[in-house]
Length: 158
Image (cartoon, rainbow, N blue to C red; front, side, top):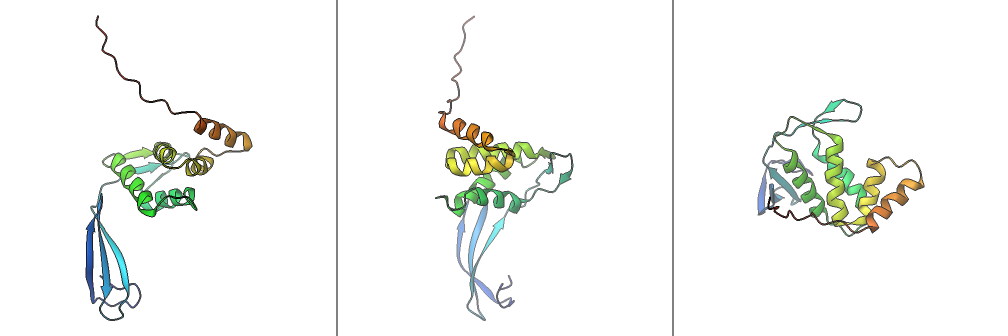
């Protein structure tokens, strides 16, 4: 592993921790003493993302994380929680050949609504393309309404 500061290949691992889908390693450069973090992830086969206009592009974890980070800016949401959301969404869609960007957006909105209502509104304003203040008002009213718990399935005796 190369040191990002001096480029030396003489680095050593000082600490390793397992996370949900990765191994986090703290490293130290033997030459300059710089400390940095690396992540080892299992390479998953991720689907192509089908955009609204029908074009297809490669799955981009960083693009998804950036959108979530912007929505959570100055909110009490830790970076590790944001990464966990991305991990869960990647796990949800891995193995598929293609996925609509709308499905990804809905999955993010579902997680943000539970996590932080302000982040949810911010993400929704971009994802749902609010054109005026009425879109914001509708989204806020929707957040204020209590979420319905999934209906319990009652066996019917016929």
